[in-house]
Length: 455
Ligand SMILES: CC(C)(COP(=O)(O)OP(=O)(O)OC[C@H]1O[C@@H](n2cnc3c(N)ncnc32)[C@H](O[C@H]2O[C@H](COP(=O)(O)OP(=O)(O)OP(=O)(O)O)[C@@H](O)[C@H]2O)[C@@H]1O)[C@@H](O)C(=O)NCCC(=O)NCCS
Ligand SMILES: Nc1ncnc2[nH]cnc12
Image (cartoon, rainbow, N blue to C red; front, side):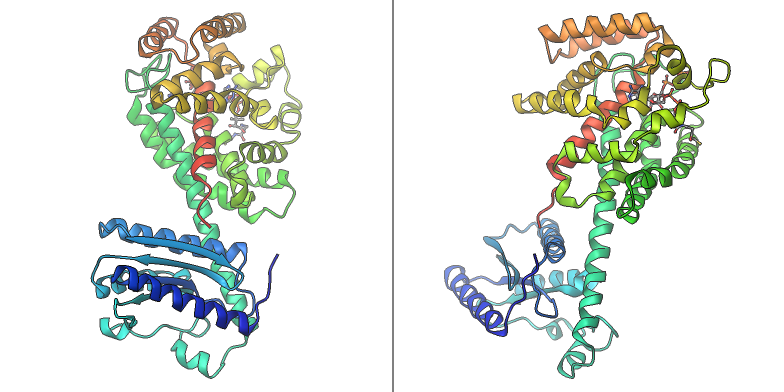
């Protein structure tokens, strides 16, 4: 809920800020940054404003890392009168002012940041000391001091522009983060070693035409596609979920082309183009606060693809079935990747994620938890790639064997996984569908644990 604040409240807040500054200066005798947001009008706090403030804090953290600075003290508060953060630093005030003004001047969002630098004697460092121009007006780009003292623009105009800047910054960050985590998930999947029959750091599994570098080329080539999926999700967020999915399909066709270009014609990620692309679009549709909830994200995936299996397989017959997916549907009623997404990726939510997270909590390394999660996924789903390279009977027997193995050892060690790898290779088996579900598991793990940024 948005609360309006009075002039008295704002004056009280300013007084409190000054007192806090004085306490910090008296305690540390070092320069400090006081970071607030420039927000016009009586509403100083909202989720959107907090997001912008969170981004500002993230940019400051990055500058501290670059300058190898650890704040001696820091705090942040979110009040109805606005967000405030303080940082006490053991550094030259002008050096600090240089990097705060760099942040303020780098982007439109930076225009909304007010990062004051206060010297140990309590005096503010001025932009002019760095030969920098004064700040510019949000609306006309003229000197901000002139526009604000003469009240040249209306509050409504300023609020509209502020919302536009905050919204654009929020969306750009969500879209880039979704795509970054998607590519990271694909890279974690291929890097997880050993994996039975699959490409990893140990070998190329049951494949002759690709290795770990082929997968890296493919994953990197898909970054713009994942961004486009998340952007499509954001742009269609107000529309019924299936409309977002409909808008994705042409992007998916193009991305398959990019993948084939990057790999010299090898099918590395066709399944992932489809399923990971849908998850990126679901993230785009959802407010960032919901990313921490895997079930909610996957419910969105399900809503987007409602009715997909029936629609996609309508008119497919034993005579015209062309893809492996279509043939297996006609023959056994197996719904493959389509059925998985339509059901909200239950194997990821109920099998992959719990196994991954339990293994991480036990302190196992990424290879071991990834290997355990992959086998659990394989044991509890229908991998159409396994059937395509063997038979339905063999795939069912394998799932039974793996279930028995996992009941004894939920996280088989390197040697056990390598022995399974050798057996899969000898049988020319490759669980590509399960590999995709492992990538989706990594993705949901990243999104739920790291996706919730500081607001
Ligand atoms: C819905 C589409 C993905 C396509 O569906 P299609 O019917 O063409 O394909 P399917 O056979 O149904 O399988 C697609 C891929 O889904 C992955 N998969 C399999 N089982 C599952 C599962 N249980 N859960 C989730 N995902 C699953 C799997 O992808 C991975 O394996 C691929 C590599 O396989 P591999 O055997 O190594 O290589 P191949 O070249 O295929 O064979 P070999 O010669 O080597 O044996 C790799 O892609 C992984 O990502 C399945 O392969 C979607 O494309 C679509 O919407 N199609 C409709 C038409 C359309 O609009 N097309 C768009 C293109 S223009
Ligand atoms: N690591 C991998 N090896 C072979 N096929 C795959 N499909 C997706 N990931 C794979």
